[in-house]
Image (cartoon, rainbow over all chains, first blue to last red; front, side):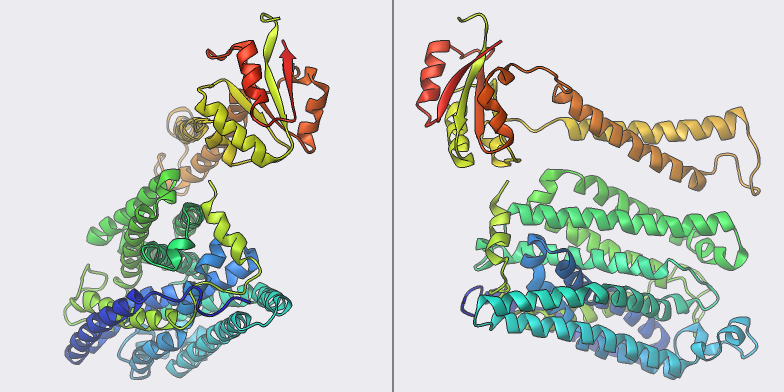
Length: 406
Length: 177
């Protein structure tokens, strides 16, 4: 069987790791100062970075499950990248701690401040209690980490497999496990984002919320992986693996998820707009006023229309660097989208900011950089731990050949 | 001979042989060529120098037509011909218009794709001169065929036939009109 020396990660990843760690560390210290000045704003900004970068990590887990279920060359060439992403879950859980402390001390999230006779408190009861909110999040992380641990373990065993039958059986085991885990994953994400993001506005609700994030985080993951692959393609070993057909396939998946994102968002809007009920429309009314309204238009144009038209063209999907450019652009729009979701929600410590007013804090820029730097450093560290391709996978050669075709 | 010839057909045992031959045919300057295989061969497009189809652009225009047709239909019905106030909303309510516009975009794109594909391929085609060669039936099973048509400007019956015979073909046939 193939040796571990094949597909050894290039040295350049370590340089990226050190660079990310430096930038993330400095930004984290600046954010830490900010958290003394304005705790709630610091935590809201932290949530923005957490949902964006944590979403890439959790999205990686989703795509890892997905590629076992569907099979295909695109899944095999990115498997090690999404595996490394799924192994960042312990760090993502650690990054959740500031938010848990914030909720426990009632310093962020309006639901921690609602009076006992508020209708949603009466109706939802203990579900709105800060301690139960934290317990649920612990469960979500446990579920995510369990799935990630299993798939990563079997993948490593496959690398060390002595014969082809063992390698084949391990692939079968991961595939059989991934089927039901897809359902578990989608349900866990739904519950998690309802708690982490939708509950910022405790009186508002939307039943498509979970799917919005399943699609959005999947898109984030694909954009991230495409950018990563385009950079890895410059050096050995991936320059001998990746071909234009791999990027073509990944580009098609990006296009599909850009459309799914738009489809779910429009569905949510259309249903609320048609129903026209005051308790549902407030969310959109806030986001259609002033600068928030313009941000919505920007999202329609640049999170959907522009990438959609660009990705429709075959040439764009087959050129790694072009596709990576579009991927990084969409990734930035994902951050804008997250800001659009989180920004206008009610504050417990407004400090003169009118409810629903457009406001960007300096910490909204620093916190995503801090989390991003630290997360990327951890990610690159994980990526270096294993060969960049599953060396004993039965479909390895076929997947590599696929990229060279036309 | 000469006037009633459709082209010269060569039979190959393997896909690789045919693709290699196709590259030589292209390099020799023939343009009116075609290849037949029991399964899709992606590399043949490049080997024969077949240009990319204009179908995707037709589908885009078709989809755009569907989008505008959907909007036109709804605008005519809801604003011009029979305006009714629904749920206190303006006659021109874009969010409600979007689903039918979307559906018509898909419908028109799909129709353009299917009928455009048939038209560009010249289908349905109940008769084709290659059917005159009995062995051509094997193109649906295990053999690969390459044809240079007589309408090619470089086509010269004797010379083309000799050229085809030198490509490693199993057999070369004259295809009558």
